Amino acid sequence: MKRFILAIVLVLAFGANSWAINLRPYMQTPPEVQVFAKRVIEDGGQVVDLEFCQKYTRLAKQLLTWDSGKFVGDANMGVKLNSGVSVQTLYDLSGNNNDAVQATPANQPVWTAGVQNGRAGMVFDGTNDLLTRSTFGLSGSLSIIAVAMSNLTNDLESIVSDGGGATDGYTLDRTGVGQNTFKWWAYDGDWLGVASATVTSGVHFLVSATHDSANMNIYINSGAPNTQAQGGMIQSTTAMAIGRHAATDEARRYLNGDECHLSIFDTNLTTAQRQALENFCNAYYSIY
Image 1 (cartoon, rainbow, N blue to C red):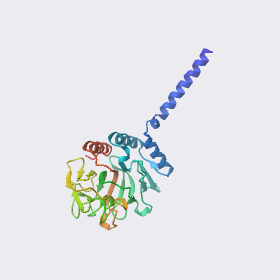
Image 2 (tube, helix red, strand yellow):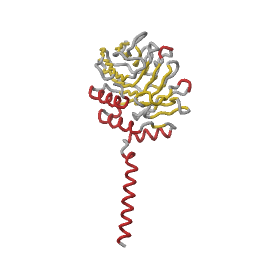
Image 3 (cartoon, rainbow, N blue to C red):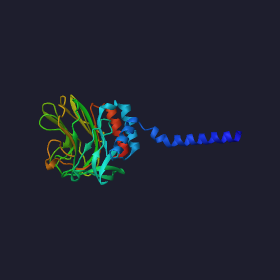
Image 4 (cartoon, rainbow, N blue to C red):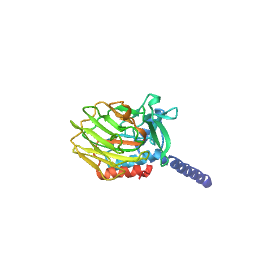
């Protein structure tokens, strides 16, 4: 009888331990990522790198309030692909469901494995590829972090733009003809911009842009900022675009290159917050 009871205890213990081991990756997943993954999968999309989503979320929650993130999209987080090739939906990890979409297959960037450090990116053709969504409203303070590459063929090609028409919003565009810099523009009753340090054609870079309602700053690869004084941005009332200026479809506005990561925060990141997020992205993509 004692042997029989011991055998039952051992089986139960072994079974419980096995169950715990099998569940451990899921039990350690932040609830925000669980909700995100469920939403992506139920929509027919795919979570590309669950561990990356987990680590990003933990870091962001340590650094700032979670609802400061208005859009967190990455080719290695969550995407919905058309015929397994082009990006129909770039899902937003921030919890706001501000997904960027493109319904027209011919205008969808191509999801491409191994564009940088073995990680995937979205390749924009410089002709008609872009992702859009209706604006989600930003105050006069905001921050952007992006991992991108440009072939520097279109003189005003855009990484991201929200509004950017005559009277509102912001845009992060190439500076102009023959320039190997990008410019951080915002509207506060007047359009003002500040150009970045130089980038190299065909080489990935990490660009950060911040606005604290008094100054605009732009950083390349976590280097020293270029700064321009400006008042609070007048928030967009129209739409956001990735890979093209939001307010115009001029041929020179389309990005010829790729984007791997884009995060937008409704706050001016402190130096410590910005550098921590930059270091995290750099560790994943090995930019500099």
